[in-house]
Length: 554
Ligand code: N01
Image 1 (spheres, rainbow, N blue to C red):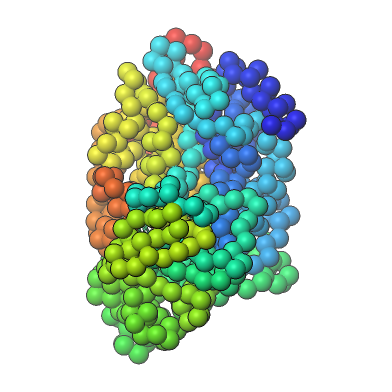
Image 2 (cartoon, helix red, strand yellow):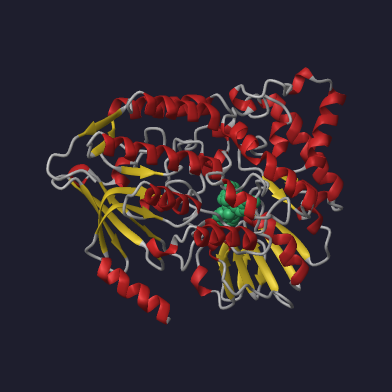
């Protein structure tokens, strides 16, 4: 333990019995902004974070090639204009180190670390009916008491190792992309096996292949990937964005995606002739990135429309990859394009033209076990110096359910969500008063620019807390009627799209035994914001608000 950690530890011990207005779990982008708002409102708050510093996703995912697939000029806070005025992004898509530096820049600018507890994992949060307060417990034995408990735990923060027999037997190096060593890894001269071809695999494989002696990629399901066409940002681009940023953000915050009937100027796939459609797909392929999903208004609604775009991408894979058999294995055929998170890459398909890169189709020859020296499939034994698990996350609910969260009458969130997550607006759960989930299931979250959704939730929660203070109210809790209606609505709009058809982490299909529920809200941040604003303006319709029974309000 360093002197600094020891000093912080002593502080934590001193704080262990202290009471706060709010405890915030997680110091990623959500926790950072939540603390800033709470402080601004004069609430006392403590942020508890498992990592040694701020950053959340961008603290943990340090694998080679890790970048955001939202353009950096959009992936930034808007709450204080001086942040974007002072910060300059270097590339169209920022690298993980640069985004982490940005998180640190914001934490420093607002002097946030003094209210944060690092290297501390929350293990339990329990609501006490009598005192109407939460007790938050950590893996260091600390206990915090707070009126409000705010989960800023992220949607993709519980990394997941697959249940392959023999995983612990491997004598070489093992890594998970979501828990990458801070000092980096040098693969020079090494034989590397990569399991998984989602965004993390697709971003890291090209760079690992450039460095390693040999790379073997184990693919179970091929994914659609669109080129990033990343490039440095010019001083002119940065300068003009600084002027336009707030207006652009205002517009983005109110946007409904094409799949929800927004952006009427976008044509439907069959409004175009075959030639016009091909031209449009080609243009969007050249622009690159997730914008490809906006190629036609009905891509995520109409299977036939989707198939035209999927065919276009499959054609690109055949063009890029020299070996037609490998191109065939890389071509997705089991889900509509975009219904698993679309990937954005730099040189991914091209990597399979390298002499030192091999692709193993696990559909033909599944992995049987990990051996002491590599991977055994039903067809072959592979020897590796390192195995990389790019096998993803227990998304959206994993981080919440990893804690023992108990609401009124000791009811556990794990039991409440045994059949899948149920929330009102993705913000609250019946039976868990004064517990908020930032970008929780049932909100746009992972289907949106996370910075937009985080700011909207933090602002909504902050306004709600201020409303409660003004009205001398002590507890807020979603009503069962409002929650049921919201869950039904989230399912209904989700079912109008093609999303539920894919075995994606959006529906929990990557976790054995996880209930199959489509978790994010697809109607877009604009309509969602309107609904949240209406609820707030009505005096929090759908929530029960109560005056204190026992103690003074926070
Ligand atoms: O995880 P994934 P990820 N044997 O779940 C395979 C965000 N993100 O870390 O599809 C063999 O997508 C699994 O195969 P299958 C982004 O939202 C963003 O890549 O289950 N294979 C799949 O290929 C993204 O969607 C960025 O058949 C196994 C892979 O592992 C999300 O995080 C960058 C297996 C997991 O893919 C998750 O991405 C990175 C097994 N037993 C991540 N188990 C950007 O911003 C699993 N797999 C760019």
